[in-house]
Amino acid sequence: DECQKTATPFQEKLRDEQTVAHLRKMRDNFQEGGEERMAELEKQWYSICNDIATEQEEAREKEQKPVNIDIHTLKHVLEFAQECKREGNSKFREGLYEEALRIYSQGDDMMRK
Image 1: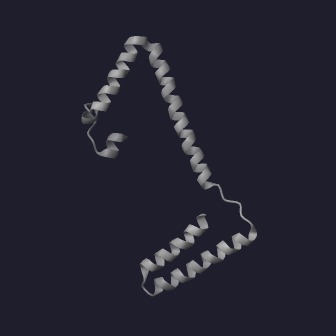
Image 2: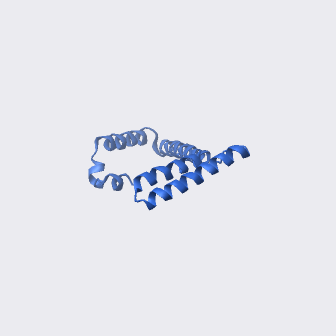
């Protein structure tokens, strides 16, 4: 995946100093503790990956949770968004596309908060 993202050939990535150092460290761990040590490292690696995935999932859930607001605030937000839509459409019809986009974005930002 990393090679595809950076458009780096796999052979070049294998010769990279960081990769070589990591592979040497893995070999040393294997020579010191054998398969038991490698199984321990694998468990440790999966634990780290699971923790990262859990943190990312929690962050996504946190972003997606709607905010509880009172009815008056909701009314204000919806009216503001509607006004942005109306003004944005007006600017768009006039050919002021960037101004329309800016106005639409304001309404969208308000709705996301």
